[in-house]
Image 1: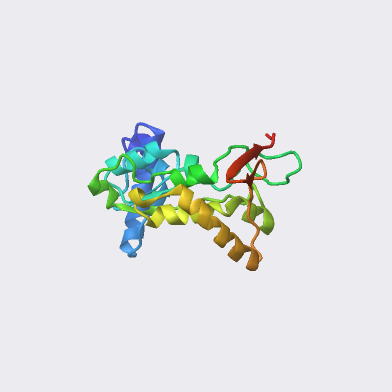
Image 2: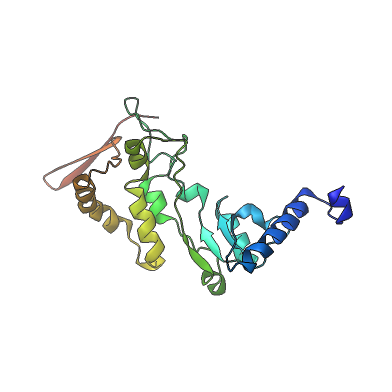
Length: 207
C-alpha cells in the first residue's frame, strides 16, 4: 500500500526511498551517511559514502556512481578468511576461504578507478568478524601479520610496493608483536632451510 501510494515499483526503490529520508535527517544534524554497498541499489543517497565489500567490482560501481568510497573488498580484505592451508593439528578458526599474506599485500585497492575516482577513495579497511573467532588469541591469529599488509597497502603507492622486501621486514614486526604479547600466524605448511647458499623449501600437506 505504501509503495503504491508513493509510486515505488521495486523493493530496491523502496530501500532507496527509505535511505533518502534517513539521509536527510542525518545531514540536517551535520552528519554523513556511510553504508555497505547495497545502498547503491535504487539510487545512492546524496553525499553518502559507500563501503564497497562485495568484491572489487563494487569498488568500481561506487566509483562510477561518483561516491566517496571505503575499499572493504571481502574477497581480499576479510581477516576471518584463513591465512593459509589449515593443518590437521591447528586450531585456527576461519570460514574456510584462504587469503594469504601475499595475496592481501598485492591487492590493489585503486585498480580500474580513474584519477578523479581515486581522489574520492576515503581509505581501505580490513574486516574481522568475531562470530568466527571469539577469543583474543584466535582473533590475533587471524589478524596478524596480514593487518600489517593492509596498513602498508593503504599508505604506500602501488608502484613502490615490494612483497619480498615487506616479507623480510615481517621478522622485525614479529619480534615486536611477541614483546607485546600479540599472537600471530606462521605458515607451518612451508619450511625453509639454507645449506651452502642453497635455499630449500619444504611444503607440508594440509587442508
